[in-house]
Length: 284
Image (cartoon, rainbow, N blue to C red):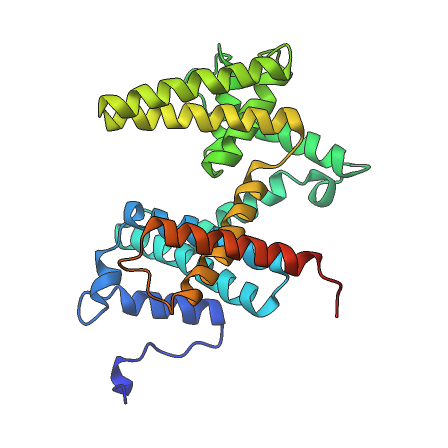
């Protein structure tokens, strides 16, 4: 049983209680070694992972899972706030005050007597206020020579790479930076794929990574032209792969070691056929 002396003080406010728990984890005198090693940079993968797990819980409509994942995401906020507080830069109160001020400032139709007839008007007001704030933050107040690029850079900063690529693609196309037809997009896909093959063959991993990014970006443009969601498509592929892979594992008793590719491929095709048959069978 844990020593009561090591427990953080109980607080009736759950948020403050969590703040105290995180402070205890980060306490140099007896805190958690893993938590003490973390920095803003080292926590980035966990922030992204937890955000994606929240989205997954929402897609599945699982409240218990959603509550848990939102808690994990909140923990990331708390850790970042604590690290900044230790460095005397800002704290959780400053974070809360900042977002409260922003929400009040960007909702004049709620807090300042302005009017907004619908959500489109709200978005227009939000964007106008955000643009004014950005202009105030520029060093000399001079208008940007690349306003669309500046806007997109800020917008995609907080998006996953694939979602960011779609945002950039849509905005650039709307501004006129667009192919004449889908055939032109496919030509670009093949061009970028050939460049990726050459980069991989050269053994230059940095170059190959750049070319892989170009291929993926161009495929996002294919998705835009076809009106399909690449993120949803890839998420579906992930689910299908795991379904098939789990059946291959089960058929081999959970042990894939030492199996030949021909045996694995045969079981893979069997799993695909089994899933297809299950999907086409009448509901019982």
